[in-house]
Length: 234
Image (cartoon, rainbow, N blue to C red; front, side, top):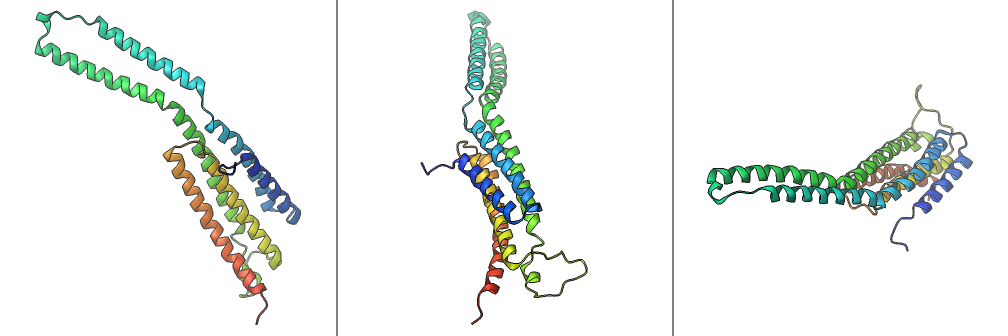
């Protein structure tokens, strides 16, 4: 029961996070990103279902194509009739060479048909993972200018410094929301390979998880700095 990710639970978590962000930072850029994240979560739920589901119609078509190909090959072999006096070394070499060429082409065609379902699913998964990677960078962009040191007065502002309108508590909440969003991006990526054992897709998901973990680590360094200044001095 608790060994698999629940797509519905992920959607509910994202929806709750969107409401929390909108309550505290209404009409903010982060709130709009949270809305987009919820849309992506709903799309991930449907896409992951498509990728995990066996496509029996496609598999049946592949089986029929394989059977027909083998039947045609068997029919061609049955049509070959050679008298003993006609079977020379030259003829034998020509037959073997032609047969090998045909077998290579047939093997390539059969491989294409057999792997068609996996390649379709892989393309869907890679497109979705690419969207998640872009979304992770968008989330990171929203926290780039949220500098705790500037907010805590550890340095003078310059003419082009970003406007500081958040209190230390609000900044900590803002950064925490960004970290939660990045974590959910990683969970959505994992949905695509939970029931799809493909090495290419698995490697892409691992890269997303490494990306979101690294970005979240930078955010928590900022949160830790805020918390250290909030502690009473002894």
